Image 1 (cartoon, rainbow, N blue to C red):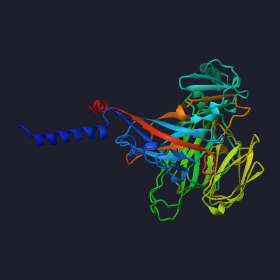
Image 2 (image 1 turned 120 degrees about the vertical axis):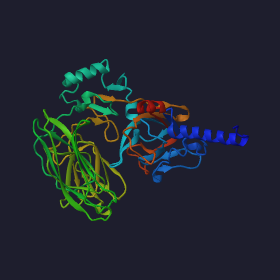
Image 3 (image 1 turned 180 degrees about the vertical axis):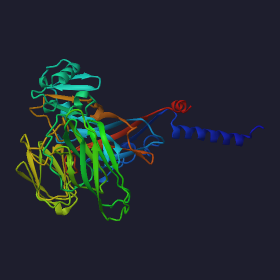
Image 4 (image 1 turned 135 degrees about the vertical axis):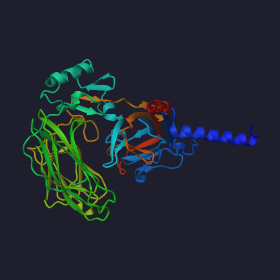
Length: 490
């Protein structure tokens, strides 16, 4: 039976609609691209509706038909996609009006929503860009910057670093003269210098939220930890705790402490004991312990561990009955924040005094002296951060990590080499720059069809003179095609 003209139009319409939905929802070609140009938010097609607004609002200044001006760190945006993808390339077009105090611009994707951890990559690093008197060698994604032209290739440097590290750094410890930035995965960068095996002191100052610690383990000896944990039950969701031991990026052992007590959101806390036991290693190693949980988690006590524990990057003491609180670090820059007005106080950092004057503000304090420096807190409920580690005493201090060339570390006389995966941004007309970073989104967190991204200028605050002018954000996703999925299915 022949269709009437009206029926034919309807059939054509529904067929066209079905094909449109197929391409929009399934993306059979495996590629989708979204972009948002802030000067032209009225664009009928493109990123609007897919790329969300930059938040929080107090860190962004924007007027109609104008670029988005980032005045605080960090800012976030989400991208809605009709399906999952395996890779995302984020390109930002911007004008850098930042000061020398904020040399780094990064972009990241959310990979862990429990502790809001973002995998970040570089858009721009002015410190590296200004190394005009250093020699730069490059092989594939690896860039080697050397203060003196000793090595003729990256391969030569790697071979010597692997076999004779004392020819790189006189003490044989690569992290004493080699710094990193956005480093590629190289075997020599996975090696860690062991620290003190003994001198473990039980930690009895309660810690809020997730924490990480470095420790050293003896060969052929079982690894055992004992914890006392508190669940505040302020969050309505369950609060499992994840205990993990890493050797570099490799997981040695892990355990999950389920939240089976109930009472979520009622504010009635409860305490529970937890242990973690790991098989022995064949050699003496430096490892990392991660205790991961929500903001409902209080680590009340760590009563047993294989060796002295050093805090990695961050420590958040609360509910302490011991004052003052004393930590040690070899970093020259620390930052502190508090949400508690009662925690306003004087901070002693390397015998210099600074003032933590107001809640909800981030304060950064610097000290020029090299070597270990003491930090004294009169009160707790303060988040203390740095680009290295914190220890409880000079005797137990050790930092197995390489220095990272970013906000918390600048090049000093001891720095002779830098390894980075970095390319300078493309300079365009009118002072604009364009830079890209590519992420593996198989490991990214996605909720309600949205990936979450971040743009970061570490150290940028609304009271600073500098700003980042964002003209355009473009996100290009790629993944398996419909035909590849069908081939796998059949």
